Length: 207
Image (cartoon, rainbow, N blue to C red; front, side, top):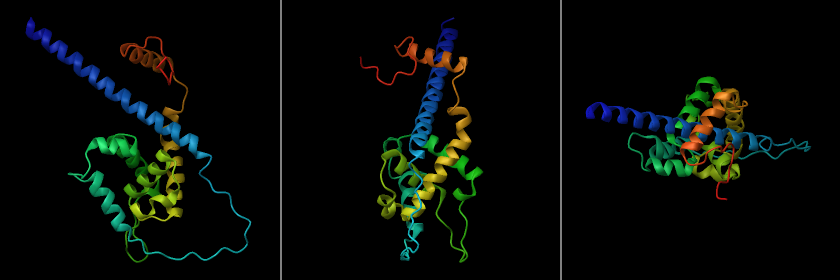
């Protein structure tokens, strides 16, 4: 009997851990969607009335170095920075970032890596999604990430726009819809289990 009781307790513990993991995963994606929607309106630059624009100077940024740097720091099999650093700097867990990135790669050609006319590979999905997340997460200007990711401000702005469009089109139907009765019951259950019975939608529980 003791053995059966221990197995039941273990299964219950595993179920609770799994449920907490799913709930945390969904909350993080909810925050990303909310962040994307809030910033979406300010991402598009209004066209200027100038008839003639100065010619842009071409800069060889060696984009491969930008990819190699961020890949070795966070995405290799033995990354330089551990998972807690990833969560701090990307404001989400690595599996969630990869889920979003893989979905964008599967549904939008822009996030796929293709060779140019000279056979040289373009910027990687990791570079583009990292650029978008850095701008959205920290509210910084695009050109601040040029040296780190080896991407022009124009390329970073386009990545942000495409990222916003992709997240809304791929995840909006699920995470921007009104909550169902099942959603409400699940959220209330999670809140009650954490010591906040009846809490729904509160963002400040200090009082």
